[in-house]
Length: 122
Picture 1 (cartoon, helix red, strand yellow):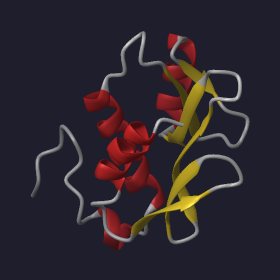
Picture 2 (cartoon, rainbow, N blue to C red):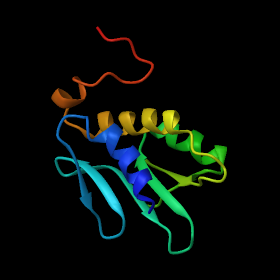
Picture 3 (tube, rainbow, N blue to C red):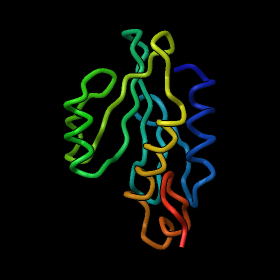
């Protein structure tokens, strides 16, 4: 996994309350409490992937969008995305998706502290 990508992902997730980066069984993951927010891995096949959480309707929508998105078999609310620097990575979109994933996985009192992209703060 390119270290620059891990740093960019950590710049988004590492600023969120109690979200920590750690080595995973393969690659790197970010967790809040015991819940995985995102997991980036791959490279042995020259393909890098990131998985994160989404609302059920979003999971279905991303699955039907196709490449670079895919459905993961790890759970009903997991969205996968291929990371391909040649095809271009929309880092702003990924930051929004990762922030949403955090808010789905974090305890409510932590998620309420986060400004979700596109949402007005009360």
